[in-house]
Length: 200
Image 1: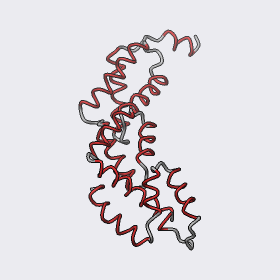
Image 2: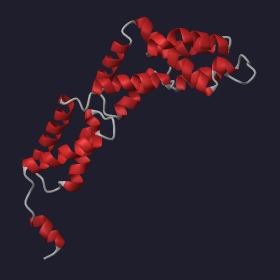
Image 3: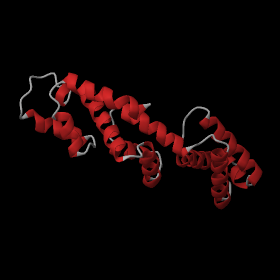
Image 4: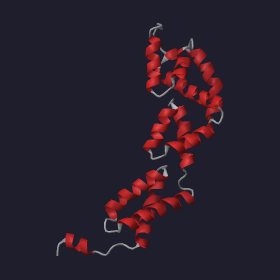
């Protein structure tokens, strides 16, 4: 009798067995990585394809959702906290809000949820402008753009600097404000004024 035949004749795992294996996998993964509920579902589905291929697909779907929901209920996963963390980290890294939203979408976070949480972080319009401006200034400092440019400044360079900021997701108005600053000192002074409030 071949191994394939033995495998095909093996009994299907019970709901209890499936739940135990998926729960163990979820806890092992979450002990090592910060995750979103969508990402955990993906990990569990891949695991199930490899290790639980004899299981009933509908039952698998149901248990994967149950295990994920349990992880959320127990506080092992918090999509909103994950968004807030990525938002703060993104701003500190000089990422535009558009770029942060794109990264969150790649992690399976819905745009609506991400925008709602980010809007709570910057509840007033002035806060939203300042957080985006702070990120643009941080980006400019890291990449030697605009007032942080090490090259001798020529007016024709402004278009190039504006284009770099725009390519990284910053709105034209924000990019223009950064490029218009007369020096690195002026840019640092503006950043010092808005950075602590935005990123605490």
